[in-house]
Image (cartoon, rainbow, N blue to C red; front, side, top):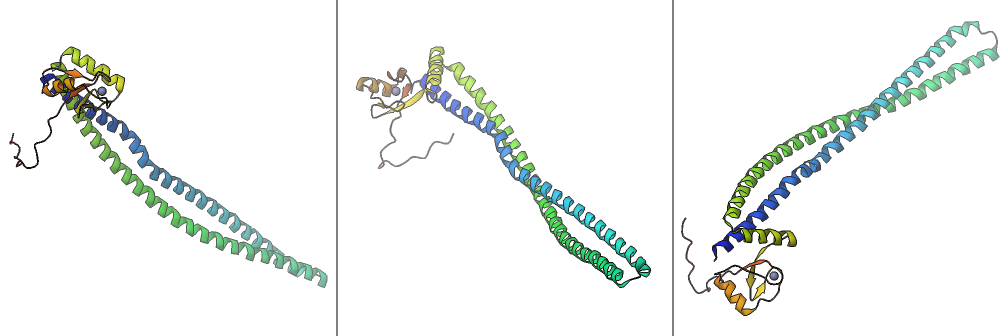
Length: 249
Ligand SMILES: [Zn+2]
């Protein structure tokens, strides 16, 4: 194969791998943000549990206070029992104490329910804290894994870019320019294979004479339609021929 054509093929292969490495490096921050979602979810759930817990504790405190107040009133009423003169007064007095006692029972029931809820949310908080810790650990691990991958890719990218510059410097300037223009115009490949008299870049038929010339590869040819550089790969030897092991380099 023509030396310059080989360089063009190498250049294209490097350009594709540089492009895909660039894309993978760019994806890293997006991947990290994706892994932040479970931590965010766990943190939000923990905040909600804590808020609910705090409001329940406050609710219980208020009710404790109400019980104390009611108890206080009952005690005061009871100390006044001796002052009562008439039966009617006594009945009203007794009724008043009973009402306060009833409200104490009711509030005490509410306090018990609140305590049960508090216990439930204590459990939720513990569970959510464990989830947050787990998500933080996982995120940290992913971040360091991705950072390592990114720096490895960055290193490979530098090597590929250096190789690319080397190939580009060995290419004829006109070929390099034409390669760059075609690549920019078509956005994918500027060097393609020909097979069965067809350009595999645009699927256009190649005239037989041109096809033969491409096979000979004494010069560089482009597709008259899409302007991509064309190369030909000799088909693999027939099946009946024993396969030779490749030479050890
Ligand atoms: Zn073509």
